[in-house]
Length: 222
Image (cartoon, rainbow, N blue to C red; front, side, top):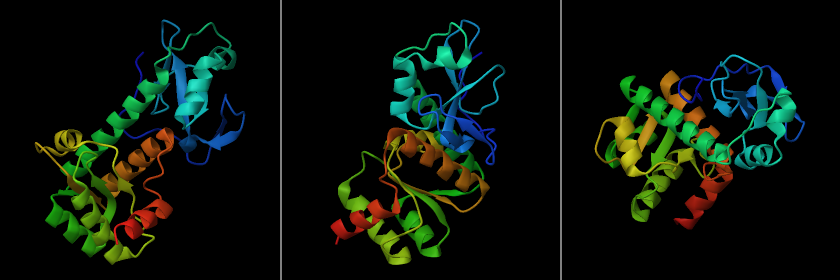
């Protein structure tokens, strides 16, 4: 059994589970499922489809770290399982891999555009599901792109701004050597990527894509 990280998560939007850290009932979409592999080592099951009894933890790096630190998986699964100290990092890696995989699917579906001019045109058309700016891109380009977003939607744009990936990662996912600006468009594949990117932001405690922070970015750019 190996940790899963790619593809469409098999979560039931209407079903709740109990987080083993907070003991609060949450929708499956707000949690991460973990199972024990054949060696009794805890692994993430991001698609929630691996066999065996599962333990659910809030979609939060700190919560996963606490579950490891307090050995809560053994208590929840009622088994002598062990969790590695690097489990929170592994979850982060798998979430990123899943999102980049969906970005590649959006490209294949014709629901992704790259390059400043094409992204700006997509924003103007109102078809953007998520805006991507490379984490290592220039600040001047970032300001101009946010200004375009503000012109189209106003200060509270309903479009997530994703800065979780570097230019090389975006390029590999989008089939180009170096991507600074990109956008995924409205459509099944584009929305799937946007949802996966939102899970990364929530896990890492990054609210940079929220409406409030977009508004702050816009004002700072004026």
